Amino acid sequence: MDLTRFLGADHAVKDSRVTLLGAPFDGTSSFRPGARFGPSSARTWSEVLETYSPAFRKDLSDMKLADAGDADTFAVPGWDAVSKTIRGRVRKVLSSGSRLLLIGGEHLVTLPAVEEHLKIYPDLAVLQMDAHLDLRDEHNGARYSHATVMRRVLDHVGKGRLFQYGVRSGTREEWELAEKERTVVPDIAALGGILKGRPVYLSVDLDVLDPSVMPETGTPEPGGITFRELGSAIYSLRDLDVVGADAVEYCPWPGGGGPSGAVAAKVLRELAFLVGGDA
Image (cartoon, rainbow, N blue to C red; front, side, top):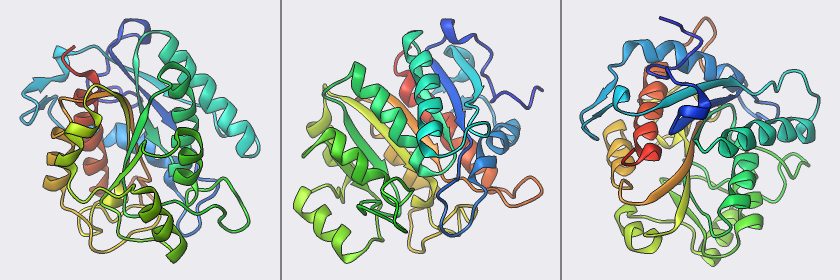
């Protein structure tokens, strides 16, 4: 098996319905770095999976899936340059007619992906599954950080278009802003009526899962959901127009990572079916 390519990603980008793209960046990590190794480790761990999803009742062989490799975030200094690099690679995927499935990297890599989607879908809604609100205006003196990413997304999409599920951590100011903007969604099933017919970008920070399920993240947070609950949440969105998605903050342990890699890879597999829709 070619471990430089995700399971079942056998098609060229120009011929694919969904394209995986890695964004190996963790330059603003504030606790445990290493998410830059997430894309390559998730590809390696995808080998343990079957191509068939019993939840979606589909096989990866039923859809055209591509793996475009990684954005070259190592060769450029600073967030501005990294963001420009990611945006360029995302733009190339979207201009081909394929839909994006981004593999992080830390959560800040979501921002350039959302920015590029907004150019095509100006009424885009963003759904975040995460342990943390990520609504700080600054973190350690920086406006662009894994802890500020959803504040920057909110700056772009505006009121009523950011939805947050699974969150259980944030500063007092973040919770006050979340309450003011009504971003937190306690019941994901309620989103069906709100987002039906609208383009949706889904961002899954893997620390939404409890650390007992997903310990290999940059900032583990106790009290999270189970894998089965996350799978059910993803499946519940199947009737929405999820035009792009990402899975971020997989931070493999040194030496190739532990079994969290299988968790990350399986989430990516299910997201591929969700983004691929009926195609």
